[in-house]
Length: 68
Image (cartoon, rainbow, N blue to C red; front, side, top):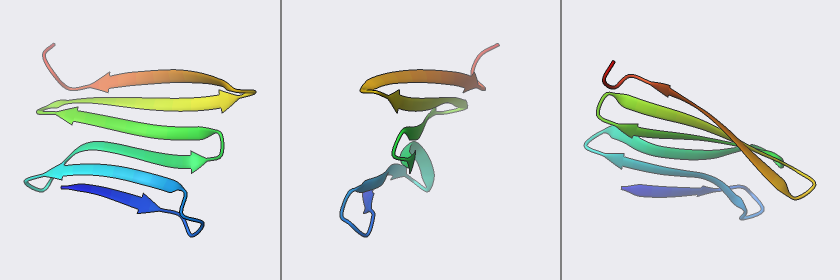
């Protein structure tokens, strides 16, 4: 199931994809300049932070789980 959550002004706040009770994808706006994302696949998770300043978007990520 894909759920799109909006702010009171109808702007995008979150997008969540769940299957069988497990969150596979989650994108959430933390501020006007910062978004957080998590992508899950089995035991592996990637977390991504997106920031913008003066029309430039920068992304940072970290991985957890998966094969050693």
